[in-house]
Amino acid sequence: MLRQLFRFHGGVKPATHKTDSTRLPIGRVPLPAELIVPLHQNVGGTPYPLVAAGESVLKGQRIGAAEDPFSSAVHAPTSGRVIAVEPCVLPHSSGLRGLCVRIEPDGAERWIETAALAWRSLDPDELRDAIRDAGIVGLGGAVFPSHRKLRSGKGGLDTLVINGAECEPFITCDDMQMREHAAQILRGATVIQQMLGARQVLVGIEDNKPEAIAAMNAALQAAALQNIEIVAVPTRYPTGGAKQLIRILTGIEVPHGKRSTQFGVQCFNTGTAWAIADFVENGRPLLSRIVTVAGNVEQPRNYEVLFGTPMSHVAELAGMQPDTDRFIMGGPMMGFRMPNFDVPVVKATNCILVGSPALFPSPRPEMPCIRCGECARACPTDLQPFEMYWHARAKNFGKAQEYHLFDCIECGCCAYVCPSSIPLVDYFRFAKSEVWAREQQKNAADSARVRFDFRNERIEREKQEKAEKLAAKTAAARAAAQSTQETAPAAEDDPKKALIAAAMARAKAQREAQAQTDAAQDKKPE
Image (cartoon, rainbow, N blue to C red; front, side, top):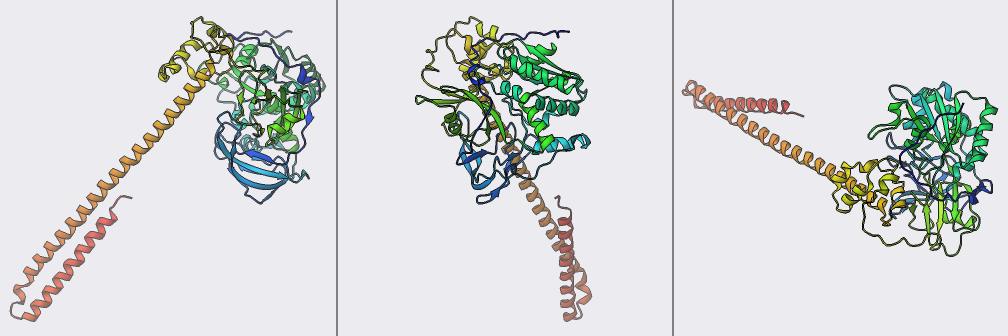
């Protein structure tokens, strides 16, 4: 029985450019002279370093520990010596630096001790912690820590979606991984299914990948797995978006501000399922991933690449052409231009798109918006990009948020169809960054205000305490004087006795004053 499929709003059909990079099997990349491993490779906090310069490391050894619940560990991709732990240029268009571990490989590839994980007998929280410490994150591009998604929520899960759509042009890493490692992907999907308690598993693959669909179906029949279905979905960008694929396969439309788990659905990438299977079966943390090298190269191909490998080292294997002028991490629709050729491959690197002036000519000049509405018709999240554009350009960020700015997935469909050649996504990214920056400034100001109020309260409290001490001393002095006057008549007949009595009275007054001071100190609030 054929499964009923649904449609999502909008989308486009750009040229796919996928055939050239799928002609050869997945290749291996030789070790470079140096690996530069950024500690921050996922959504969430930056792991803190566990190694220092001069130390020797083994392949798979943890070099960065998760800092908070949304962080994930980082491991040494090979054995060797730590050259330095220092800021290096990160693979981001901003060109900013972040803390990295630079490793000089020794070529021995000496592993840490690894063993299969008895995951079925582990407590769910223990298993999630183990996956966090294995550094496994979403390999579809979002790099969200997988251990955070392996929670079914209050109502449990009905459906687990394994995302093999891979809709963006040029990128074929998931396609090739499904062709060559279909059985392991399905075993990983089974682990995820049991952890989440999902009733069924739907593996969505775009119908322009017939070899991957055939390989996954063959592996499913060989394993005789129950409640898992391979579903071919129509080729349309951005079918690979989680909400879009969930809509196609289940008919569920996840609204603004809601999570798919609230509707009984969770989504994982095929590469993530493969990594989870590799960890529970072999005890190996996430050290590498499949990367597509395409564009201005002689032989486009997919390679298994260790994290920290310079992108130029990988691109040269595919025959990078001399007129290359840029690297784009990701595809032409959602990718980011790299600040230089030697930035490292990280967990988010699904593609190194090698560009040139001929392949990516300069865009046409931006013209005024004519409010034609084509961007709204193409938007897969049913937004009004032309309205967000006007407010973002006017720096009216509050109004842009009213049009659900943060629902934008930055897929680029609006810019792709815009007849005025307006780089709409750039405006939306600018607006989001400004809103985030202002939120940070507001939070910093709120914290400063709290500290200022606390300081004023402390000063007032100290003034009050000083006044109380002074009042206590004054009262003690008055009591001493009164006591002296009372004892004076009794000693009038003997001047010496009078002096002794006065001294005793003063001593008694001093003791009483000290006692009152000590009592006031004891009552002081902490």
